[in-house]
Image (cartoon, rainbow, N blue to C red; front, side, top):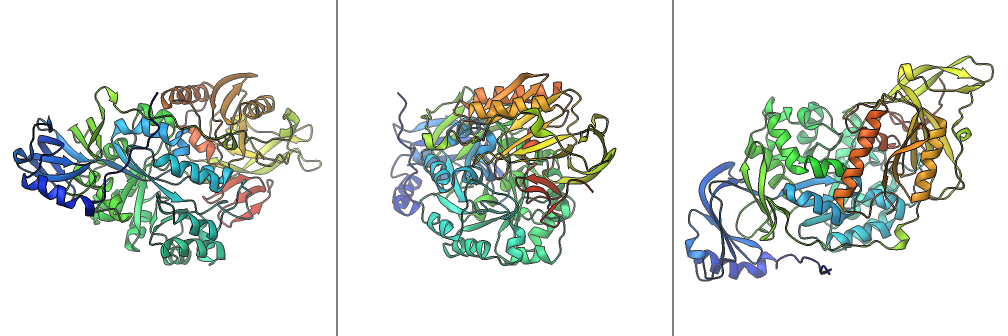
Length: 603
């Protein structure tokens, strides 16, 4: 039976300092010595050859040219053989739930890819389970052999009045969470109009975090760098990951924010964001790399933060700078510079042995001085972390759906209509606000495959109200009768169904009701792919390797139906995110995020 004991962090540096001094002076032996490596020093920006590092009690004690004096009869000695010694990678902003798995399984997937610190915002589960969901992930995070810090969700729901989540959190909840052991800050403040307008909810939450001297995460999704942007910065958010252009990253840094630049499964913002460094010569210290959202297929098969660092280097960032942007810069931002983010004395001994820096191919991963992964894969046992029954059975629908539930009635006497259509943008989170002329058949408006317009429906799934909002979406490229349904629908996480066939839409929705949530694709009346996610309708309770296989099958099935977008499921899951322009769907209707108002389906 695997142990359920948590992997405790080493003692604080203050308490360990005498022991570290003795090891550095040669009076006591180190637990571990790595000899002959190339030290990627993120403080000086150098790669220093022929370096030894000594570890004691899970912290670095000595980093220098010769650690022979640190050796004892029980010291483990590893020959780096000229390979690079790199600090463990940090993901500055991410959502575990996007990986389709629990915190434990997420760590199982990413540790071999060199991620040793994560800053997670569990606002997905918070929208379904409220404070219980945050606490469940907070407590699970504490049991991991790597550092999983939690940001208290700030926007549950993300846009009050424009959507209804299963829970509602406010300043009192934030103030309570600030006292929890593993809360590092306030999660991304998506309600940027609320900050600009000084609404009591948002000003209260930010104030609670700032009084606790915690970092406030940002999320300014508007492309307009006008007075609302300046008001947002003045309101307290310290970083932002929603910029998709070079000028967005530059604007954040100039205002004293950290520009977080993401490469997720479907968000490709690094190439644009790093141009502020590679073309304009800006100081890279306030640029940070992150993923935001990666599904399990990406994590298992392509990587995590190693993938982001590799991509940044390919975009022209110097290797050492790219490493800084995924280590020291992140640690400094969250006030953890003296704890992690570098290979220097006193810090947690989180480090990688890398054989090729530009390709960022990792041979070994150490966390807190313990070898966690090598060429053979994960080398530590991660105990399963069961979720209680209260976190399950969250797909609450009044009844099974029928094809007629997706009928869209045309205005009386119309032969055609001009409809507002959500336009998907490949590899980006924003959408377009399109208008298309669509046909009317027997009094009903239908999609138009020639124009790449299909139907979208948001099905209420928290309170079994029976509510269904229908609309149109373009850009998926479906060419066959099909439907994709998902209970992952950022951020209120109702059910989104997109399809070209009302019959398949009903079948897909009912299938998710039956299995307790997840994502499924039906085509021609038959199920083509299914990823069950019974935990809050957001996460699987299966191993990450199995979930990755199912996620890959989902991508294949979408392609078989004509969808050629990169990781289109991620775009599907964001179609209800009413805090990112331009057009979205929610349980209250179609929302124009440029004005933060409901709008009519027909022009």
